[in-house]
Amino acid sequence: MDDRTLASVVSTTRAYYDGPADEIYRTIWGDNLHLGVPCSEGCPHPEAMEHTNEIMARAVRLGPGVMVLDLGCGYGSTARYLASNFGCNVTGVNISERELELARDRGAEAGLNHLLTFEYGDFHGLGCADGSYDVVWS
Image (cartoon, rainbow, N blue to C red; front, side, top):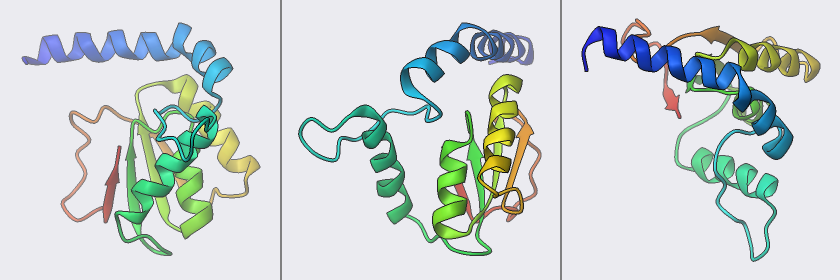
C-alpha cells in the first residue's frame, strides 16, 4: 500500500471512530471495544469481553514494571484492566481523539494515571525504539 492510500485509509478510519462509531459502540458495548469470548452458556457480551482480557493476560508475563503497548486502545478499558490487575505500565495508542479523551478521563477516574498514558498514533508508523515495550497488545 503506498503512502497516499495508507493516509486515506487512516483518515477514513479516524473519521468513522470519531463520528458515528463513537456513540454506537459506547451505547451498545460500553467502554470495551473488542469481541468477547463467552465464559459460559448465555454469557452476556460485557462479561465475554472481560473474559477475553483474562484469556489474553494469561498468555503473557504481566506485572509491575512491565511495559505494555496497547494498539488501538479504544476507550482504554483493556489498559485500565491491565494496570489495575497487574500493575503494568500501559501506553494506549489510537487514531480516535474522541476515544483517547474518554480513555484519559476514565483512567483519571480510576486513579490509574501513574500507570497509564494515552497517545494519538497510527500503528503503521509509531517510531518506537526496539525494546521499548515488553508486551504489544492488540
